[in-house]
Length: 179
Image (cartoon, rainbow, N blue to C red; front, side, top):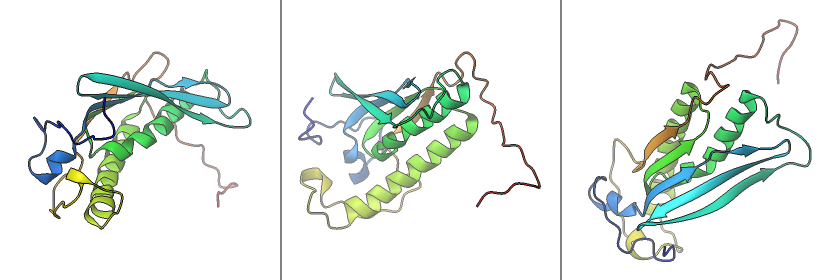
């Protein structure tokens, strides 16, 4: 897979038409499932483009134990954390697949943030002068769109065993507060 020239040979079948469509360079970005340890999470990131796959592992590590890998709430948190980086690729992918335990609220939040991030990158990084851009990424014209994200967001295995997907609100107390 040639990541040096990502706009070469890009097919926009099934994607938005016009200048916005030529931003799609990856068929799919897959994230997860996350492997969780007491002091780190490991998430495979797999890019599929031009019939080839390449994977790398995203690792968040901490100097002390911050997770309990046996609790579904921690697996859920780790999956949301691992998904965060993928939100930067909504303009450039046909599909983003997030594999892990996500609640309905997580799915709404990640979908909203994906769209917000796509719009922000389009306006602030691609339309404004940027000396790092070359080729097809330059010279885009501003267009007001209903949707800036090119990727279809897919959630896989959102209800694994031991995860009921229900939000568990914090207990309230009139004697406590948070600043």
